[in-house]
Structure formats: C-alpha cells, structure tokens
Image (cartoon, helix red, strand yellow):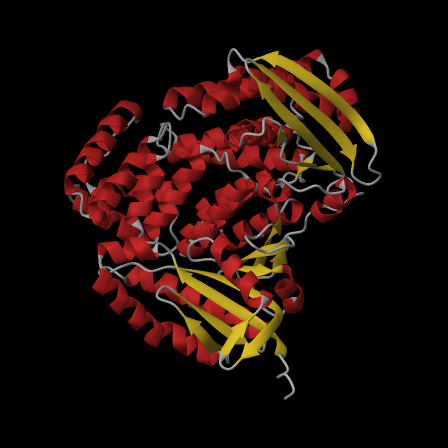
Length: 592
C-alpha cells in the first residue's frame, strides 16, 4: 500500500494566549473561566469568523487560528486587541483579561483538522514575546502586508526565538495609529554612522557571572547613545546575537550597522580583564582594539572606569570630525556648554527652586552663545514646567516665554527630533491639535528611534482621548531607552489613569524617584478609584501640603478652584476625561 502523502500548504497562523492566566485562575477560577467563555462567544469567535479564520486548536488559556490571507490574520489580531482594550475600560467587575498575539506566515502540515509545522511554532513563539495587549508579527508577514493595512510597524530586529533554529525578524504592531510607518534601521553607508555593540563574552565559564559582561555591554550602549551624531542600535537587537559565532560583516548587515563593537570579560579572583575591539562592518577590518586589566576592589567603580575609557576611545575613533570641531570651540562656547549641563542637572531635582536655578543658568548660557540651540530648548522646557506647576506669579508670560524659546531653538536647529516633539507638546497645550500632530510627525520623520519623542507623543495621545494607544507608545519608548527618565513614568501613569487602569497607574507613579507635586494628586485620585480610601486621603493631604509650600498663590481646597491647575497638568480634549480626574479627586476628599 502506498504511503499517504503529507498535505502541506502556505498559511497565516495566529497564536493567542491569556496574560497571567495562572494568577487569574488562582484568584478566581470560576470567574476567569466564565469570563473567557463569554469573551470567545461575544468577541473572539465573531472576529475570527468575520476575517475568514479557522480555529484549529484551543487550550485553557489560548487558541490557534489558520487564515488563508495574511492580511485577514493581522486585521483579526488587531481587531481582537482593540476590542479587548475597549472592553477592559468598561470592565469594573470580574477578571481583567488581556491577550498576547503572534502572527506568522509559513509552510504548515495539515493532518485532519489539525495544523503542525514551523509555521505554527514560530507564531507561538512570537506570541510569547508580545507585550500584554499587543501583537507581534514575523518579517515574512510584514513583507506580505506591504501598506495594505492602516497600521504602524515597529522593527524589533532579528530575534532568537526559543527552540527555533534561525533568528526571526520581528515587528511590533500598533493598531491604534491612523497611518502606516515602518521604522527603518539605518543602513551602512548612511551619513550618520551607526554602531552595534554585541554582548561581551563572559570567559569565566560560570553562567552566573554573565551579569558583569552584560552590564558592561549595556553601559557601553547607553554611553555611546550620548553621541548625538551616532546612531546606536538598540540593546534588544544586538543582544539577539548573544552566544552566537557569526561573521561580523553579516551581523553589521543584519543590524544595519556601519561599525560593530565586541569584547570579552574574564574575572579571576580579585582581577578582571576586559578586551574590546571596534570593527568596520563593511570590510571586516579592525579599527581599534585594547585590553584592560584592573583590580576588583569595587566592581562597579571599575566597570564605570572601563566603560568610560572604551566609549571615549570608540567615540573618538568614529567621530573624528566632531572631535576636530570640539578642539576649535571657543572659551565662550565651552562656558555656555558648562552652564547648560549644570542646568540639566538642576532640572532632574524637580523642585521649584531647582527650576528657578536652571532658568538662570540657561539664560547665562545663552548670553555666552546665543546660537546654542539646546540651551534655548531647555529654557523653553523650564518656562513650561514653571507655568504648568504654578511656580510663577505671571503664568501667561511663562508660557509665552516657553513658546518664544522653542521657536528660537527651531530657528537654530530644525533637524532636532526632540525639539519638534517638545514644540508639539506646547501646541497641544495651546489646543492646536492638528499643528501639534504635524510636529510629532516631523519628529518621527527626523528620528523614528527618538525615545523622548515617543514618550511625549504618548502624552499627546492621552490628551486627545487615546490612552491605550498612548500606553503602547510609552512601552516602545521604554524599549528604545530602557533607562527612561522619571518624567516618562509620570506621563505614562497619567495614561494608565485615563485608561481606568488604576493599579498600573499607582505602580507607575510610585516608581518615580523625585516626583513633582502633581504626581501626589494623581496618586490620590488613583487610590480613590482603586478603593484604597485611606491612602487616597493621605496623598491628597500631602499634595495640598506641598502645594502650600511651593505655590505663590494657593487655590482654595475645592475642585472648582483647582480646575485651572489640572487643566495645566494635561490639556484633555474631551470633557469626560477631565471630569474623570475631578471625580477621583472628589472621591479622595476634595469638595466641589
């Protein structure tokens, strides 16, 4: 009897899984199961049917779906996540369920009603690395979609997926954005030099010592990112090559890097040896290499010293032109830069006195060098924060000065993506939403990898009534810059609150090291809605007490009197969002 021939076909596979399923079951087993059944009947199954999909496998916490069209598969994934986000906003009772979804296009094996093969396995692994409420797709899916769906795709680079032999190019999908953008990785030969730092190899033979080599690698990436004229490939892309032995020219091609840094760390007793080398990714030629031997009296101090030495050497090798320019900098220019750096350090303290000091430092910096655009940008930022926090008597003048300084900065440097994002935020507070959106678009055109611009755009999305899309923007900003500043958590916390995700809002606000007083108010409203009335009262009292010490004129402790302050905190476009905040403050104990 002839052996039965294996049936194969090309199919788009959607894999979905419930986030934190075990935790949900532990908290409320019957409620979770009932909620999942209801979701499948009311939300998931209708969406799959609408997009001509076929569920071929279900588990307690997930499902696998086959589509003949890759467009239908991705559209279905996005529709499910959008519906879930909307459903969770209105879900005041019962478990709050979120999915992770992965989509892949590949060759599959058909056996009865079941589907097997790498096409399915990759989809399942893509689902595993998707964020909560998010969708990740393979590069094959992205290529077949072209621009046929109204979505944003963020390139996460090559990823080594568990039990998948070859790395897979991965894209994250932002379904809430109304246009298509594919974030490119810079290609070798571009005007801006691009560099990838591969994970330094630990030579100790002890996997538990990897933290040291990984830490040095991350520090080198972070410090190299300070060079404005150098594009540094993100950590998540370069770490995908950890443990692999590859031709560095191939690595450079895959990551779009002009240069590659690699090295090793060997720890023996009280000594450490680090080697580092810089390679031209186009030719494979060694540009520079060195070895560093140190005592390990203080591992972190040694790590800082070595990172500074390595980075300064690499930066000097790559940015010869910038170094030449720096040697020609005038005494006045050096003085202006010193004052500018001192102002930035003052801003990080987030107090009224610190911002007043920063404003003075920046004004002095500009007197030394009126053409130094970053000083004008930060002067605009300082004036804006002083206006927003009610730290000045003449708030109208402070906001006008913020706009004036931003325009001066733009006139000096129209190619700064962060500057366009900042100006977009000022226009948001002027209720000029369309012009604000144009400046954010300009920021992403100039630098699609600007983490600061992504975070500020998240705030814009929150203000115009799209908090779930805003949270995705903040998540992306955090991926671009894992060491994101405190103000990013502040703005993300507002997005969580606006999305009625009070527990997430509280956790995010509390992660801020030096919060401005406004954060205490948001915490009071968040605690009130979460049911923790005692903590809500404590936070509201702390907010009013701090305001009494900081504000030149203190409003009455009534919501109506504080309304202008909160309109300065976030310029909500929709009255319902603003009333939501006021309702939280009211629950915390502030009278009308």
